[in-house]
Image 1 (cartoon, rainbow, N blue to C red):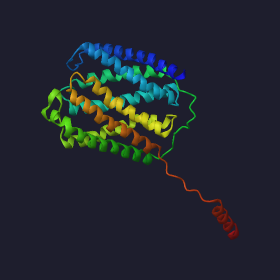
Image 2: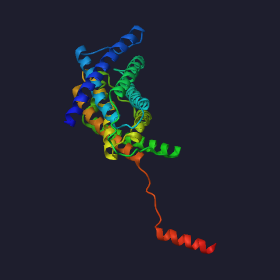
Image 3: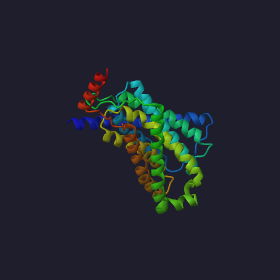
Length: 303
């Protein structure tokens, strides 16, 4: 009974957020267009685009609802954490598109897309925060930890390095098997940047990805394994699945499908690694009572 109630809750709230996503994107796009901001040329069936807008909002609602129900923070901070997560992922997607798909997203049209997505996620974050609430039944302890700035910086750098590593491993495999020829031929607006450009771009994107999920890792009241799974799925959905769904009518099917699998391994494994890195604590070595007592005894004898 509880499972059915939860499914129904996510269903109707997902429909609301999906509709909110559709309306927000449409209105904001119209306003920005009237202000003279240039958008990319719309290609494909308009009804399909509307469907993908709604579906994207529904998917965002599901993952957002799972987060909010386990995120032990005040409502205002939940909103900030959600919007920060969405916003930083939008930045990483824009950077990726500018270098790898300049025929789809150019420097001229990027401000319009970025503005539309940012405002949309502002409303989506507010909607998810208002509709879902923290599940107080969980008994997992909080993970808030005090560290020096060196400790935080070191974890951010190592976590970022893990994404870059996974990016090159799975990206190289996919390029060798399927996508390489498409990018080299610059089909459908695709472009293959130089190795130097990639080495400069991906560490920046990696750092932004890591920063986007730190609040989740620190405040999700779930086990470490479940936290790793949630963070991995968040990065994959926002950074891989949703962007590819939006390009299904513009990219070759082989590129879109293989890229979804590639990004799953890149983002999900990165999320798992980030979680374990940030929740790792050096074990403390405790002295045995006998040793401590003996030392105290020797100390008192000397005194």
